[in-house]
Image (cartoon, rainbow, N blue to C red; front, side, top):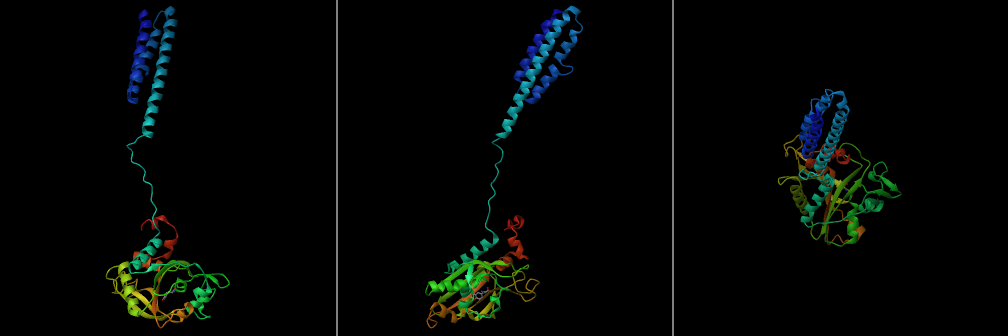
Length: 337
Ligand code: DAH
């Protein structure tokens, strides 16, 4: 029966050696079952202790318990080491695909505004800017608005002080530009504009691009040619335009410019209310009254001007039905462009 006392260290050593060489968790588990499982070799030795003569049991029992304890400890250590190696490996897995940083992009309005300016730059225009808080003089008076014009009313315009308001259009930049430079003038002025207006096609803050040409021998044909070139470049190469008589205090004659409906191409549909045309911008020949304010001589030069609603142009081009989508900052909408 002394053989049990000899067997214990042999099996213990075998177990320790196997644990030491286990490279994976499944290997280690197999070893655990073989040596430490309910029917494993070490519990089996412990059971055999009970069959020994009484005087031999204490020594054999002690040896068996000690071996069991040593092997259990070795097993737990090996398990910890393998787990740590596994988690370090996944933390440093250089084969995983990287995370792409999300890139922002220009807002649809900024993009449309640059696009419009770029088209006019190619036609020989220069981009200029003016202030958003404007005086009554530049916003109305020097643009030939009569003193009792309705847009001078607090109900229509957003005043920030006495004779100081958020500009209602980009047209004041016409006056500021002519004050600063002498003809020839070929400029476009993009920017924010403000009015007391708020519904699905009007926002209290919106955007315009103003155009002004003052040069020798400018006629209405130049106006139509330039705006037609713009419409074909901005919408599509076959976009037709038409001029409709209109009125603005700062142009004479004045014309509303329509484009052939972007949806039906002119046949008539719900968008163009059956007319085949969509209103795009206001324009006209610069009223000579304006030249008096800036010291130009109307006998030497003539000019045309236009004012284009950027939000409206973007809505037509991209088929948007509600202007508010542009200003709610909802990425689900903005990311489509
Ligand atoms: N300022 C006008 C508006 O906001 C638009 C406009 C019409 C501008 C005719 C012009 C123009 O330069 O000639 O409604």
